[in-house]
Image (cartoon, rainbow, N blue to C red; front, side):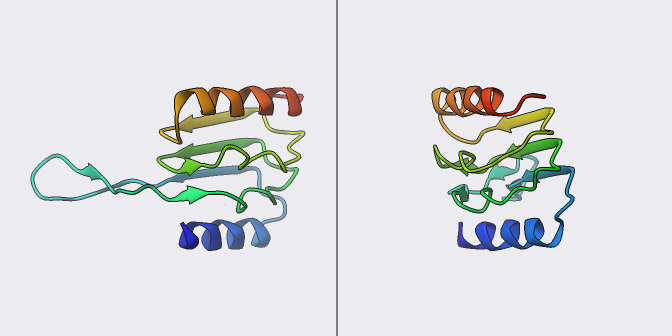
Length: 106
């Protein structure tokens, strides 16, 4: 989780005009033909606070999102949001609903 926070924070800081961000945690190879999810999944808390207002597409997969992970964001141009395996379904629905209200183009 600390590594994820550092890496995403660095990417966001280095790309002030970022338009699309897709982050997938992935799976680890455990032998055989069935890769297994790498557990525990990293948690994103404050690293998403500084997403730039230029962001139009956000896709997160297999990253646990804290319930308030995106509350500090101002994303007026966000048109596409994809959250897959990022936490409990009810929490992700609430987070998506809050972003829909806050992002006029979503």
